[in-house]
Image 1: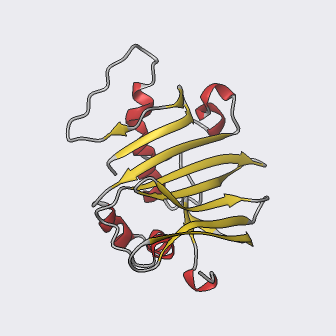
Image 2: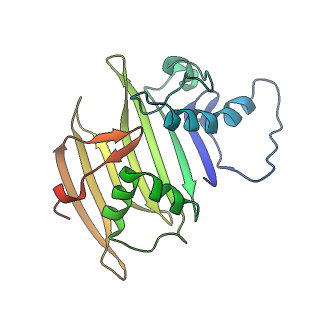
Length: 197
């Protein structure tokens, strides 16, 4: 991961992009959100290392980030969100994670993306005491490629905004409504064989 940002999380309505470098320094007043920023990558690591079935594991063996209601910015919103930005290091992640590999391959149709800037934007809400992914968006070089959003309690709408035909991106809206999508944490596990793309 190269950068991340937070939306409606802790003291951030909408944070700037935080670039992760070998040395990253946070300076600010007390209670301005420095710890919330520093600890969020640990929340992500905890989420994927634990076997719990939740899109974002806020409390676990590595860190206690607070419960969902405490994490929401000033308790004003019904959802939290974050953006993760990747570059060449995504190649290792794609090889390691089958579900993410499927999403990438569906969206880009085997386009060579490792020199691209890839963003994942995730929005999570709490419904009937259960934390669920409300929406996941996939961007390549700041172009929105795919959106998976919750339509009701259980079914998702899958929209492909652009497709790669082997040599270029094509503007094309493809919409699948009523799909039951399973998630690996906050990454949609979409079976490419079931989608007529």
